Image (cartoon, rainbow, N blue to C red):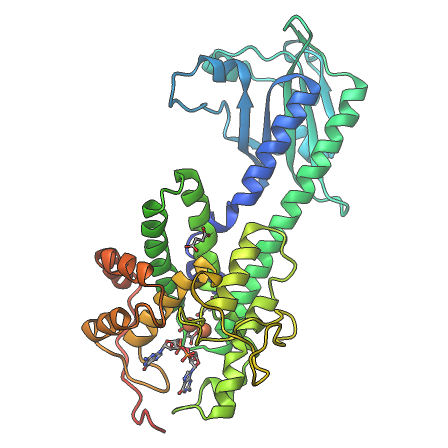
Length: 418
Ligand code: C2E
Ligand code: SIN
Ligand code: SIN
Ligand code: SIN
Ligand code: FE
Ligand code: FE
């Protein structure tokens, strides 16, 4: 039987999405290369602790990189190292101490760690000096190890790391630790948010949010290719947009059940309350620390704006929901056209298409044909017309996403009008 956590993991998509928040990737790569630059280390790795092992997550080697043919990728020596005695990095992770080794081929027999020459033989690289610094939190938890290899003197010869080098490396290790902690926090918050949304609406299986995210990605890729966005930007944005799109309605956790689950049309006052789910959701991402927070905030905030300016919530303060740009009636002026964030415009189409095709407490599902016709008919008024063209162009992929995350067949509400 799938546990609750398994289910949540399925809702998010795959573990790897969460385990690889792109901002963290870039940050840790940068920290590693800066540490190597400052300390003149030819190579280095960052290992992340997973259960009782260290997993190589980032690896750089100038000498090996120079030998690569174009397009070839660096093959890591070791993928997993047990935490404990045996290796220098495993020992650093176990003890929490910095391990500075002058020459790995001269480690005394009785030392609690050693070096396996197998890895050098396999890669054709000669390791001499290593400096392994545990990534230790203020609470004393070990998150991983930063390892620098082969300090070079001005003539390019491998020499030992000094006591001063240990201090400098420790500074970079602190930065890496903080980056990892931030990412863990973001992941924890994301999991909590999906759990919250799930608790609010037990009938939601997660297929709906997965479909909206899947549709949004297809539209985004088409838009990005059409606008000749670089491949690395598209790849980086995909993971982020998927999570952000899944959370587009997270603000609904702030809406009372009487309104959220009302089996019929909402009245005027109820609709006004319902509209607050946009900025209430956006509010969760106001401490914008990463690209993810930024995109998630824009998506939550602007997925109900209309291209012609008639949507909501318009120009409002994301914390209070108060208008920051008012019309003559004192209400917030709607955002229009490209004032609306590109990701908001994309998710808007994905969301409405899926809402139309699905049963809701207040309506029965529409056919695919009718739903597509509706989206097409709203190009230029509700939706960005270029994005509607993108949506139409990727309909086959949208169908694939829809099949992949299809719901159990369910009955339409008995009395949609309540
Ligand atoms: P939702 O059910 O996920 O719907 C998302 C959006 O899809 C709606 O945004 C609307 O733009 C579109 N949509 C859904 N059903 C229809 C439809 O039958 N015809 C057309 N033309 N468009 C449709 P909207 O209207 O701003 O609503 C936002 C959310 O407010 C909805 O999310 C739903 O949770 C709630 N809601 C809206 N109207 C009602 C209602 O009459 N009764 C209840 N109980 N909830 C409602
Ligand atoms: C769910 O539909 O169960 C999860 C909701 C969300 O991720 O916002
Ligand atoms: C963007 O480049 O993020 C926005 C482009 C657009 O408004 O279509
Ligand atoms: C829901 O969570 O009930 C619907 C979300 C959506 O249509 O985007
Ligand atoms: Fe919404
Ligand atoms: Fe929605």
